[in-house]
Image (cartoon, rainbow, N blue to C red; front, top):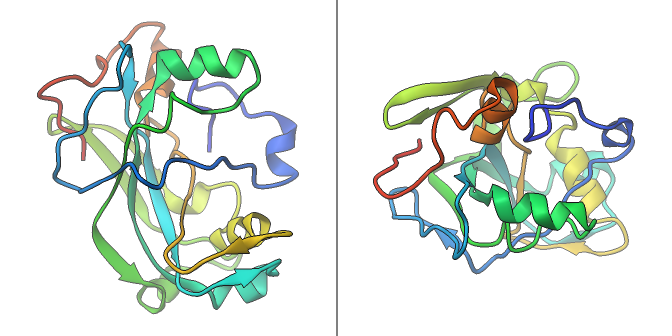
Length: 201
Protein backbone atom coordinates (compact mmCIF):
# COMPACT_ATOMS: atom_id res chain seq x y z
CA UNK A 1 0.00 0.00 0.00
CA UNK A 2 1.01 3.60 -0.43
CA UNK A 3 0.63 6.55 1.89
CA UNK A 4 -2.56 8.58 1.29
CA UNK A 5 -0.37 11.39 -0.07
CA UNK A 6 0.96 9.09 -2.78
CA UNK A 7 4.46 9.23 -1.31
CA UNK A 8 6.51 6.09 -0.52
CA UNK A 9 5.90 4.70 2.95
CA UNK A 10 8.56 4.88 5.68
CA UNK A 11 10.77 1.85 6.38
CA UNK A 12 9.00 1.46 9.76
CA UNK A 13 5.89 0.49 7.81
CA UNK A 14 7.46 -2.92 7.19
CA UNK A 15 8.63 -3.49 10.78
CA UNK A 16 5.14 -3.81 12.28
CA UNK A 17 1.58 -3.43 10.99
CA UNK A 18 1.01 0.09 12.29
CA UNK A 19 -2.62 0.93 12.93
CA UNK A 20 -4.88 3.41 14.71
CA UNK A 21 -8.16 3.11 16.58
CA UNK A 22 -11.16 4.77 15.01
CA UNK A 23 -14.62 5.64 16.32
CA UNK A 24 -16.78 2.49 16.69
CA UNK A 25 -19.88 4.66 17.06
CA UNK A 26 -19.53 6.23 13.62
CA UNK A 27 -20.47 3.27 11.43
CA UNK A 28 -22.64 4.17 8.45
CA UNK A 29 -24.66 1.83 6.24
CA UNK A 30 -23.41 1.06 2.75
CA UNK A 31 -26.14 3.10 1.05
CA UNK A 32 -26.58 5.81 3.69
CA UNK A 33 -25.57 9.46 3.38
CA UNK A 34 -22.27 10.40 5.03
CA UNK A 35 -22.06 13.84 6.69
CA UNK A 36 -19.03 16.00 5.91
CA UNK A 37 -17.19 16.70 9.20
CA UNK A 38 -17.60 20.27 10.49
CA UNK A 39 -14.91 22.57 9.13
CA UNK A 40 -13.61 20.17 6.49
CA UNK A 41 -13.10 21.33 2.92
CA UNK A 42 -11.17 18.27 1.70
CA UNK A 43 -13.36 15.24 2.39
CA UNK A 44 -12.09 11.95 1.01
CA UNK A 45 -12.87 8.23 0.84
CA UNK A 46 -10.51 5.30 1.35
CA UNK A 47 -11.24 1.96 -0.29
CA UNK A 48 -10.34 -0.89 2.06
CA UNK A 49 -11.33 -4.45 2.88
CA UNK A 50 -12.07 -5.20 6.53
CA UNK A 51 -11.65 -8.40 8.48
CA UNK A 52 -14.32 -9.13 11.09
CA UNK A 53 -13.17 -10.92 14.24
CA UNK A 54 -15.35 -13.90 15.16
CA UNK A 55 -14.22 -14.67 18.71
CA UNK A 56 -12.30 -13.12 21.58
CA UNK A 57 -8.56 -13.57 21.96
CA UNK A 58 -5.44 -11.99 23.44
CA UNK A 59 -1.77 -12.02 22.38
CA UNK A 60 -2.59 -14.23 19.44
CA UNK A 61 0.02 -15.61 17.08
CA UNK A 62 -0.76 -15.10 13.38
CA UNK A 63 -1.58 -18.81 13.15
CA UNK A 64 -4.03 -18.54 16.04
CA UNK A 65 -5.47 -15.34 14.61
CA UNK A 66 -6.56 -17.14 11.45
CA UNK A 67 -9.00 -19.19 13.54
CA UNK A 68 -10.45 -15.95 14.94
CA UNK A 69 -11.48 -14.57 11.53
CA UNK A 70 -15.23 -14.66 10.93
CA UNK A 71 -15.28 -12.98 7.55
CA UNK A 72 -14.54 -9.98 5.37
CA UNK A 73 -16.43 -6.95 4.11
CA UNK A 74 -15.89 -3.72 2.21
CA UNK A 75 -14.75 -0.73 4.29
CA UNK A 76 -14.86 2.89 3.22
CA UNK A 77 -12.74 4.86 5.69
CA UNK A 78 -13.94 8.44 5.25
CA UNK A 79 -11.25 11.04 5.91
CA UNK A 80 -11.22 14.80 6.40
CA UNK A 81 -7.82 15.41 4.80
CA UNK A 82 -7.42 19.03 5.85
CA UNK A 83 -8.08 18.13 9.50
CA UNK A 84 -5.95 14.98 9.26
CA UNK A 85 -2.88 16.72 7.80
CA UNK A 86 -3.03 19.38 10.52
CA UNK A 87 -3.23 16.72 13.23
CA UNK A 88 -0.43 14.62 11.75
CA UNK A 89 1.88 17.64 11.75
CA UNK A 90 1.81 17.64 15.57
CA UNK A 91 2.36 13.84 15.73
CA UNK A 92 -1.03 13.04 17.26
CA UNK A 93 -1.98 10.53 14.62
CA UNK A 94 -5.43 10.43 13.04
CA UNK A 95 -8.04 11.91 15.36
CA UNK A 96 -10.86 14.27 14.29
CA UNK A 97 -9.75 13.85 10.68
CA UNK A 98 -10.80 10.20 10.77
CA UNK A 99 -13.57 9.69 13.32
CA UNK A 100 -16.65 11.02 11.53
CA UNK A 101 -17.72 7.94 9.58
CA UNK A 102 -16.77 4.49 8.35
CA UNK A 103 -18.99 2.62 5.91
CA UNK A 104 -19.21 -1.17 6.00
CA UNK A 105 -20.78 -3.58 3.53
CA UNK A 106 -23.21 -4.16 2.04
CA UNK A 107 -21.99 -7.78 2.11
CA UNK A 108 -20.02 -9.91 4.54
CA UNK A 109 -18.25 -12.96 3.12
CA UNK A 110 -17.30 -15.72 5.54
CA UNK A 111 -13.64 -16.70 5.83
CA UNK A 112 -14.14 -20.19 4.36
CA UNK A 113 -15.59 -18.72 1.16
CA UNK A 114 -12.37 -16.78 0.47
CA UNK A 115 -9.84 -19.49 1.33
CA UNK A 116 -9.54 -20.52 -2.36
CA UNK A 117 -8.29 -16.97 -3.10
CA UNK A 118 -5.40 -17.08 -0.62
CA UNK A 119 -1.92 -17.00 -2.19
CA UNK A 120 1.19 -18.81 -0.91
CA UNK A 121 2.14 -15.83 1.30
CA UNK A 122 -1.27 -15.72 2.98
CA UNK A 123 -2.71 -12.74 1.09
CA UNK A 124 -6.14 -12.73 -0.54
CA UNK A 125 -5.92 -12.21 -4.30
CA UNK A 126 -9.06 -10.13 -4.74
CA UNK A 127 -9.66 -7.27 -7.16
CA UNK A 128 -10.53 -3.90 -5.58
CA UNK A 129 -12.12 -1.05 -7.53
CA UNK A 130 -13.54 2.32 -6.50
CA UNK A 131 -15.73 4.71 -8.47
CA UNK A 132 -16.81 8.29 -7.85
CA UNK A 133 -20.13 9.23 -9.45
CA UNK A 134 -19.89 6.00 -11.50
CA UNK A 135 -16.43 6.87 -12.89
CA UNK A 136 -13.72 4.41 -11.85
CA UNK A 137 -10.78 6.22 -10.22
CA UNK A 138 -8.83 3.39 -8.58
CA UNK A 139 -8.03 -0.30 -8.86
CA UNK A 140 -5.66 -2.59 -6.96
CA UNK A 141 -5.26 -6.15 -5.69
CA UNK A 142 -5.90 -6.90 -2.03
CA UNK A 143 -2.80 -9.13 -2.14
CA UNK A 144 -0.70 -5.95 -2.43
CA UNK A 145 -1.43 -5.00 1.19
CA UNK A 146 1.62 -4.77 3.43
CA UNK A 147 0.63 -7.43 5.98
CA UNK A 148 -1.80 -10.38 5.89
CA UNK A 149 -4.92 -9.97 8.00
CA UNK A 150 -3.70 -12.56 10.51
CA UNK A 151 -0.65 -10.38 11.21
CA UNK A 152 -2.93 -7.37 11.78
CA UNK A 153 -5.05 -9.26 14.28
CA UNK A 154 -1.98 -10.69 16.01
CA UNK A 155 -0.38 -7.26 16.40
CA UNK A 156 -3.62 -5.61 17.54
CA UNK A 157 -4.06 -8.32 20.21
CA UNK A 158 -0.51 -8.06 21.57
CA UNK A 159 -0.80 -7.49 25.33
CA UNK A 160 -4.53 -6.79 25.02
CA UNK A 161 -7.71 -8.26 23.57
CA UNK A 162 -9.54 -8.36 20.30
CA UNK A 163 -13.19 -9.29 20.64
CA UNK A 164 -15.89 -10.80 18.51
CA UNK A 165 -17.32 -8.10 16.27
CA UNK A 166 -14.11 -6.05 16.10
CA UNK A 167 -13.34 -4.79 12.60
CA UNK A 168 -9.81 -4.19 11.27
CA UNK A 169 -9.21 -2.45 7.95
CA UNK A 170 -6.63 -3.48 5.36
CA UNK A 171 -5.32 0.03 4.81
CA UNK A 172 -6.13 2.02 1.70
CA UNK A 173 -5.58 0.24 -1.57
CA UNK A 174 -3.03 1.83 -3.89
CA UNK A 175 -3.45 3.07 -7.45
CA UNK A 176 -6.21 5.56 -6.71
CA UNK A 177 -7.79 4.03 -3.63
CA UNK A 178 -8.31 7.54 -2.21
CA UNK A 179 -8.44 11.06 -3.58
CA UNK A 180 -5.42 12.20 -1.56
CA UNK A 181 -3.20 9.80 -3.51
CA UNK A 182 -4.51 11.15 -6.81
CA UNK A 183 -4.16 14.75 -5.60
CA UNK A 184 -0.56 14.06 -4.60
CA UNK A 185 0.26 12.60 -8.01
CA UNK A 186 -1.45 15.30 -10.04
CA UNK A 187 -0.71 18.36 -7.94
CA UNK A 188 -4.33 19.51 -7.83
CA UNK A 189 -7.67 18.39 -6.43
CA UNK A 190 -8.77 16.25 -9.37
CA UNK A 191 -11.11 14.43 -9.00
CA UNK A 192 -12.66 17.01 -6.68
CA UNK A 193 -13.25 16.45 -2.97
CA UNK A 194 -16.36 14.59 -1.86
CA UNK A 195 -19.34 16.80 -1.15
CA UNK A 196 -23.13 16.89 -1.41
CA UNK A 197 -24.32 14.57 -4.18
CA UNK A 198 -21.05 12.62 -4.45
CA UNK A 199 -21.42 8.86 -4.75
CA UNK A 200 -18.44 6.62 -3.94
CA UNK A 201 -18.64 2.87 -4.35
